[in-house]
Amino acid sequence: MDVDIVVIGMGPGGEEVAGSLAEAGLEVVAIEHRLVGGECPYWGCIPSKTMVRAADALAEGRRIPDLAGRAVIEPGWAPVAGRIREMTNDWDDKVAVDRFTGKGGTLVRGKGRITGPGEVTAGDEVFHARKGVVIATGTDPMVPPIDGLHGTPYWTSREAIETTRVPESLIILGGGAIGCELAQVFARFGSRVTVVEAAPRLLAVEEPEASDLVRETFEHEGIEVRTGVKAERVRYDDGFTVNDDLRAEQLLVAIGRRTNVRGLGLAAVGLDEGARFVEVDDRLRAADGVWAVGDVTGKGAFTHVAIYQARIAVRDILGQEGPRAEYRALPHVTFTDPEVGSVGLTEQQACDQGLDVRVHHTDLANSTRGWIHRAEGLIKLIESDGRLVGGTAAGPMGGELLGALTVAIHGDVPVERLRHMMYAFPTFHRAIEDALL
Ligand SMILES: Cc1cc2nc3c(=O)[nH]c(=O)nc-3n(C[C@H](O)[C@H](O)[C@H](O)COP(=O)(O)OP(=O)(O)OC[C@H]3O[C@@H](n4cnc5c(N)ncnc54)[C@H](O)[C@@H]3O)c2cc1C
Image (cartoon, rainbow, N blue to C red; front, side, top):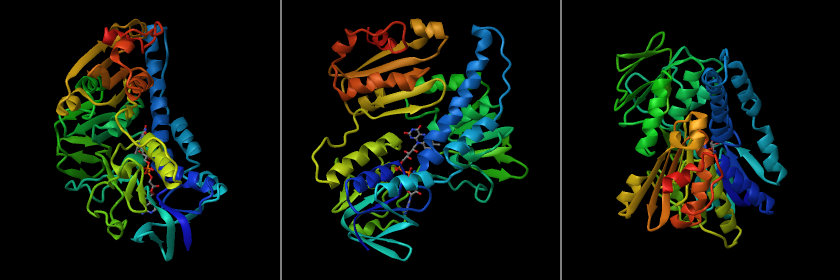
């Protein structure tokens, strides 16, 4: 079958490309072997943040004795499991499929494989793309070859999202964003949680001050944190044992994500089959007539990156000029409490790039709003050459504070301007001024 474009993978990136091109009148075939929408709406951002919201409500209730009287908090998982089933339509993608086909696109169920320049095969159907092929195959949970793990009923983030009950105890392998968010969720719902992280600290990609803050909060909430510990062995009987000394009813493996490039046929278009990511340029071109967007590009495994890239790829495919992809002001948020939002470079990354760095820092607890709120948190800003190149906001709504820092970096706002503007009193974002002064 001859078409204009074939999109492989219909996560947020693929869906944006395929839908927009179909709307623009191109003949689009999209191939998806699981659910249209991908990880984000069914097993990723949206259900996990629904869990976080519920866990935060419990934590807020537990703060009542300190602030407002008496409260009896009895956690119950049923509303959480119910909302997740509602929002995922019980893991049914009919709404998303209808949205795409309503724009004129054609959906093919199955695994797509590039079998030649402009040629994609799914099952026994072969598609020839006149304009090109878009790779948007995303990632799957990575499961390491730990002795004894294979064949046990361990969870990845997918089973954790689907669970209808809270395990009495839980070991989480991996103290990155996903591991930390889920650790706090299950702990706040009553699970005895241990986080095992091989790196020396939690959230190893964040500023060390933010990692320390999250660790302190976790320990305060009764979460056991074991950093610098590698899981070497797993045993399963009526529960899980890790490294002979840690035991829990359930084990969650959250050590990272693996890009879906294996078996995709990259060599057929001259790309490296063994590479971890599909290399792209600033128009998301990977090869002649091949574009790639989303997690598979390795530029940042976030839904907003996938959609940002998708819009640029769409313009390029339609032959329209427009801004090219840049990642200087890439924001991301870990939705723990305190929430950790960061954008651009950390202090270490800026130093590693040889930049002449000035660091600004403030403790949110000392700001007026922080004191009113009884909040723990911090703002750390990295300045180079009179401009911000990075920022971290950890605390209540750290991800929302991040908006101001992202605009400052994206818009190249001079630090002098940021120092002499007005910040509404008494907001959390006013602490940006404290940091700069
Ligand atoms: C627990 C969790 C929480 C997260 N929280 C956040 C968050 O708060 N904020 C945020 O920005 N990001 C978050 N993410 C990351 C976010 O989900 C991903 O960055 C996003 O889904 C990537 O989109 P994508 O289009 O690149 O790929 P994916 O969403 O991975 O979709 C790829 C699709 O391609 C399909 N596919 C793969 N290979 C083939 C093939 N050969 N043929 C046909 N189909 C194929 C897959 O089935 C899948 O549907 C989270 C992820 C997880 C797991």
